[in-house]
Amino acid sequence: MCSDLGRRLNVNYVIAGNIQKKEDNEFLINGRLFSVDMEP
Image (cartoon, rainbow, N blue to C red; front, side, top):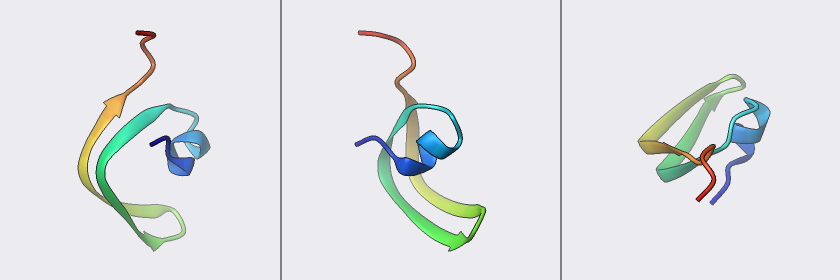
């Protein structure tokens, strides 16, 4: 699952967990971020 938040921050990562949007620029992330910058 690619996140719109990741595209906004100009990075690519996969989130295992869930995101709760608290305020416009504040996110509570439960889980881990896995970078997908490396090509398989």
